[in-house]
Amino acid sequence: MSQAQDIDIEDADGVIESVSGPVVTAADLDARMNDVVYVGEEGLMGEVIEIEGNLTTIQVYEETSDVAPGEPVTNTGEPLSVDLGPGMLDSIYDGVQRPLDVLEEKMGAFLDRGVDAPGIDLEKEWEFTPEVEEGDSVEPGDVVGIVPETQSIDHKVLVPPGFEGGTVESIEEGSFTVTEPVATLSGGEEVTMRQEWPVRKARPTVEKQTPRTPLVSGQRILDGLFPIAKGGTAAIPGPFGSGKTVTQHQLAKWADADIVVYVGCGERGNEMTEVIEDFPELEDPRTGKPLMSRTCLIANTSNMPVAARESCVYTGITIAEYYRDMGYDVALMADSTSRWAEAMREISSRLEEMPGEEGYPAYLAARLSEFYERAGKFQNINGSEGSISVIGAVSPPGGDFSEPVTQNTLRIVKTFWALDADLAERRHFPAINWNESYSLYREQLDPWFKENVSEDWDDTRQWAVDVLDEEAELQEIVQLVGKDALPEDQQLTLEVARYLRESYLQQNAFHDVDSFCEPEKTYLMLTAIKTFHDEAFKALDAGVPVTEITSIEAAPRLNRMGTAENYEEFIADLKEEITEQLRDLY
Ligand code: ADP
Image 1 (cartoon, helix red, strand yellow):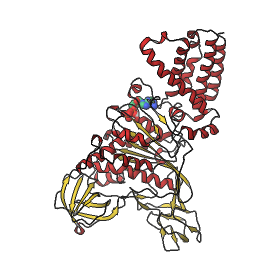
Image 2 (tube, rainbow, N blue to C red):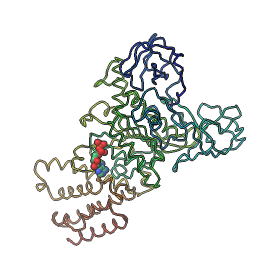
Image 3 (spheres, rainbow, N blue to C red):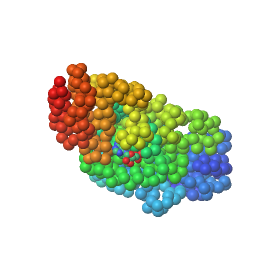
Image 4 (cartoon, rainbow, N blue to C red):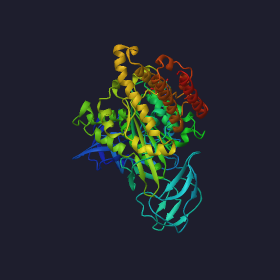
């Protein structure tokens, strides 16, 4: 956070009237909506959320248990903002962008109150290399220089939006802190590596474009059946134990985004501790460098105050927008948006607002859509293109997708990956239900897959979808009469569908090879199962009994494609053998 100035309590211009959990009401405070204020003797950080006559309502980002009426409130006059600059990658923040390691140093493992810390290190020096020269003309958004932020990412130093711009009067290579000017413009404006931005306001762009490139995840069921675009939106509703965390980790590790912003929003404390402990250990499998060198973590556990949970998604998306402005493809994962919605519900009830469905505020839908609206593929104000893909986990109580957060999210996002507790129980992983999931990006991404993978990418996928749909219908009959009562062609369809499920849809996140499946392999695996299908039906037409067809020796090897090291050769050989063995039957 950028409001780290020491405010003298004597300057207080308001007085606390009442305290209700994270919500404090003050009288006589001269404030505007969304101003950041310091509350009580301890100076706890809060934000103005309602003004009525002489009374101002404030949501406080820290525990308010010792705050009492009569204590002072000071207004900073600034909206809730984040500090943007080098050093955000490889950082772990709380919901108001206080670096957790700095907080811990200041107050030990138990987070104290009234402690402020800037979001980026103000003392650290960075090596700055200019990209423009004296005399060049620059506008807001233009890149004036580059700073190697981490092993993986070059940080581009931008003329902040809102600057006039002009001719570069001076610019120099060298070591600078984020507050020292690296360039001076003709109108006297000084460009530093640090920008502030109010979190509730989207950073400006030229236009939102239709995304046409997939965010390749290396997960077969996602890339193959339910792809998300770079700049797209997706929801993963995950009942407990269904693999929400593993899926989000897989995406953070493998998705071909330049930058990952991971917002852990009020999940159970121990789960976030896992993320905080796990992530710094993880390696970026593409580069071998630490995953954190392209990741920013925002961690708000449920034992942190509820209002900080409300703000953490805004902090995350603002950081994502800043890297997008540099022309990067950013993936933001929010885990879980349900906890965020619950924070809204709690604050709303403290304000005694008229509750909507299941006690959530009436503006739940609007807040969710404002948040997802900040995702997209954009043309930036400096002419570059960047994207933010947003993947929100939802934790519907009891796995019931009809509850308001899931339903409102579904109206907004274009990709839906439905995690399924039954599949998880049967150890079918990833436990994404292929009958319930969907992606509205399929058609607009097909040209990319056709050009980069195979001309018949879409036809092959459609074939698999049809077989799986048919299986779902047949299963209902099987439940009633048993599999053997089905005609032979339908029994064969069930066998093909079984291979689709076991060899294609299942993917072991913990297997060295299977963990990541490139689109070429995803495609080839389908063609192998289709070869089995086509040749098996030819054999059936020629009068071969289904039991003979399904017992050919090569078929079970379809289930080893995922873990095959040299997949091209493995799959080519397998297709040949399947064809030979089936043709030998007639
Ligand atoms: P949730 O976060 O939804 O409670 P987890 O992500 O922790 O669930 O998953 C629960 C367990 O399921 C994991 O510990 C793991 O054993 C298994 N699992 C989930 N997804 C996969 C996967 N893709 N591959 C292998 N195992 C998985």
